[in-house]
Length: 291
Image (cartoon, rainbow, N blue to C red):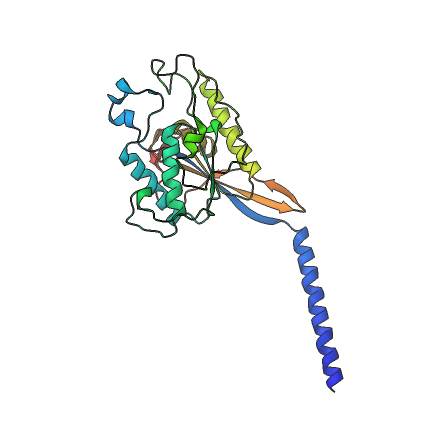
């Protein structure tokens, strides 16, 4: 009797193991579907719009920093992203302009704080950062639209060259969060006096390139108003007439993996945040809508 029971048990275990292996092999051959999310975010409040006299003495009048309210807005936007969206941010890519660097630094502090404090107002209130949360990189392709529409000719560099000390900018981010292994998509700044159409193509091409490069990761792209406007207008099929400071365009696409290869669908605009700070109307009417 003892031998018979043991044999039956062994037979059942063997059969169960075979079933599990078959199920695992079957799963490997099937599509594994998930979603990739991208947030395209404008920087916070810039000093030259608050204090026009700042331009009179600025060494780099085309590269204004944030005011304190802009830092607070950026941090609180990071907290709102952390508490409202249903997915983690894995990577942050940032325009090299100082207002975007400062914005990203505050957002990263909010996203990566070990303890979530709803009463905190800036990165100065964060006592401990989880460096494993995400990584950040500077990307020239996220730069401001480089023409006289976005930057007045009288404050643009006389030689048309917008220079940045990347190592100094990277030092603004929380320690240990810069990913030096990442090669930027754009190796240098866009050319001065690029067209609006050229700028639009730059942003849309960059989104696809970064998304395809990191298909299993959710991305936050910190950029300028034109980048957010272009992104939201293109993927939602509307006319955007205003993007608030720290306004966000949120995109999502389905990504399928099968036999080691990845296939991605088209991006669509979604709204996880209670307010994304974008005002628009449809292409067929002037009725105004806020998202």
